[in-house]
Image (cartoon, rainbow over all chains, first blue to last red; front, side, top):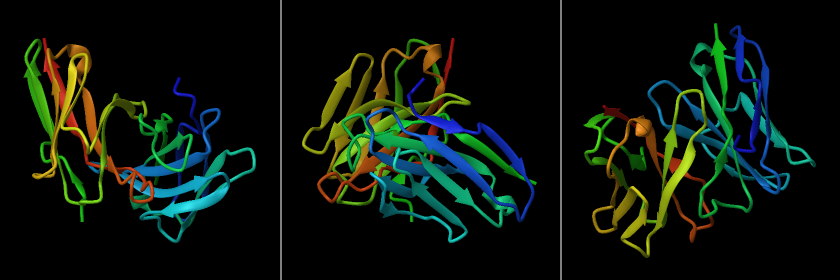
Amino acid sequence: DSGVTQTPKHLITATGQRVTLRCSPRSGDLSVYWYQQSLDQGLQFLIQYYNGEERAKGNILERFSAQQFPDLHSELNLSSLELGDSALYFCASSEGQGPSNYGYTFGSGTRLTVV
Amino acid sequence: DQQVKQNSPSLSVQEGRISILNCDYTNSMFDYFLWYKKYPAEGPTFLISISSIKDKNEDGRFTVFLNKSAKHLSLHIVPSQPGDSAVYFCAASGRNSGNTPLVFGKGTRLSVIA
């Protein structure tokens, strides 16, 4: 157990729908990162929050949004879902604003299937 | 434009031999590099890292080499074991450039054959 908790582990939904993925960072970590891994693709950085504030933004679609709450857990909202949004979504955390000497700690991911 | 490239999608090695996984990067601002290992149905886990002020870092059977002039790093696993079979991701960050988020390659699937 890495200490980063992601729920749900699996999600199947229809095109056009909206889903929310949840992440609880490792205890003591203030940064949360969201990554997307599509088929045959590496991990694509979506967005980072640090202590409740958005810190960095990557290739995140306008249909996607995220937030980090006062208890430091984060949610990634995906709306108007398309077939191409099917992917593994990973959450990671770190203590500071950037990677530690050990990088980030990753959760086990949420597998989203859009049908 | 891919800033971190792992050009070999897969690699097969016999147990006991050396595994060499390669990674190239394009962004000169990257100054910290990491290798992650990923098993199916699990998240990536940290394996080894190297700062740009070094050219080699060793941890047990794992050694990472960095060639800054060529913008190339490699991970050596000696000796390779069946339990090393996994997908390996190379990642890079600009820690002295505002702590940029980790940029990952597409991964190399290593199969160690007994």
